Amino acid sequence: MALLQNHIAVVTGAGSGIGRAIAIGFAREGAHVVALDIDGAAAAETAEGIRAEQTIRAEGGGAASFTLDVSRRDDCDAIAKRIADEIGEVSILVNNAGIVRRNGMLGADGDVVKDWDDIIAVNLDGVFNVTHAFLPALRATKGRIINIGSIQSFVHVRTPSSPAYTASKHGVLGFTRALAAELGKEGVRVNAIGPGFIATPLNASTRANNPELVKTFMDHTPLGRPGTADDMVGPAVFLASDMSAYVTGAIIMADGGYRAI
Image (cartoon, rainbow, N blue to C red; front, top):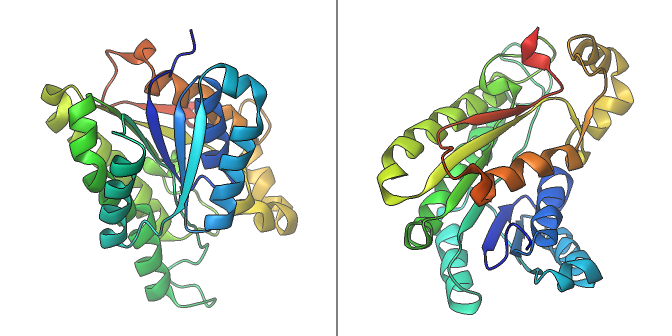
């Protein structure tokens, strides 16, 4: 039997990269996936790909999609109600949506204040907004929440990188631990995944235009290669399934060993 049959799983930022890979991976394990993204067309493409895959249909998986800006709290509440009315009660939530801008406090490029506001609004407030919206369903189903953190949940990577991004990912880890402590008695498990340097559309321009930055990461990564979005699927399936029934408040580092050295 597939590991996630009879579950309804919401994945934010599911239009590309890690979110898309996790959405597809969950569907292959039998979940009905709801792909959410600020780019509604990209979310729809993820859902259409899932519905077209014969092996997913054989395992009972399926998909729907909606447009969502996670920084808009009222929109999060509205989409949670719509999903409850049209699809059912969500039992798995993956808070993956995120943005990054590599502009430090002293950087000359762009507006540092706007970067801070935008990054915190999506990467940290967005995690709260979506979690708060789906919490009634997750409590009712004794569900699982998986937040996507980063190696920057622990350290500030010494490259051109926004302090706002580091602060947001530290916040995601703190939120994960606090929520795990609060919701444990409800039977809701809350964990995080900490990706390292993952090749996704989010950092495509960095990889293309800044090979020295990529080398800096790889020199500090024992496995010696960038991760892929598919590398995040195994940890996510584990945390979403009953295989991790006694795991909460944890972060699984999927970073190629970055934090080991």
